[in-house]
Length: 129
View (cartoon, rainbow, N blue to C red):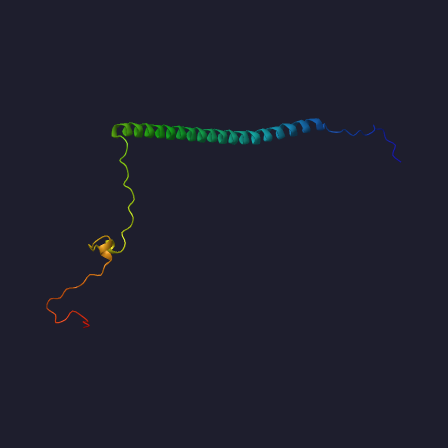
């Protein structure tokens, strides 16, 4: 047995609150940096989209203005020149003799078979007496 004079041992617990505060500060700094870069990228994206929309709007306005100018020029030209000439009526297609370019008689006499007169021949066909 030990018989000595001494005091009783005491266990001291470290102060974890300071460690927790330091961890929370570091965590907040990391989250702030991440959210800042995300917000910056989102802001860049939003500004690019706005610029694209503005360009599309300007292009639309320019096209509308060009169409209005073209329409106004066409109206002025139409007033100066006047209405266009009338179109020719469609003609039926040429078929048969007309297509070949032969000049023949028209009407009832064209249906008759003509006699070919030969003055130098001995006979003119079948003669029944």
